[in-house]
Image 1: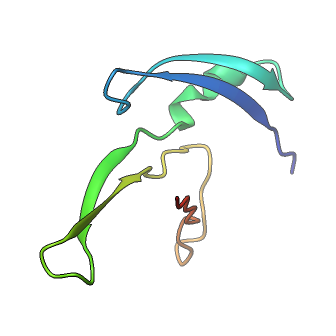
Image 2 (image 1 turned 180 degrees about the horizontal axis):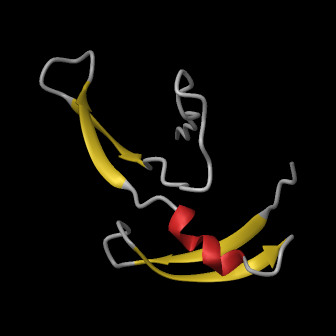
Length: 83
C-alpha cells in the first residue's frame, strides 16, 4: 500500500464557498490533478449553542474520495479547526 501526498493551491470564488481553480504546488506523483474530484466542496452549516437564541456556524467538508472505501462500521475522520 503506497500513500501519495500533494500540496495544492485552491482559488475560491468571491463568497469563499466554491473552488474555481486548482494548481499543484508540490506532488509526490505525476498526475495529481486527476484527483481534484477528491477535494470536498464546503457546506455552510449552523447549529444551536448553549445560549438560547444564539447560533454557531461552521463549514462542513463532506467526504468525497471515491478511490477510498472504508469498513462499513467505520466513520470518516473528523478534522476540526477552531479560532
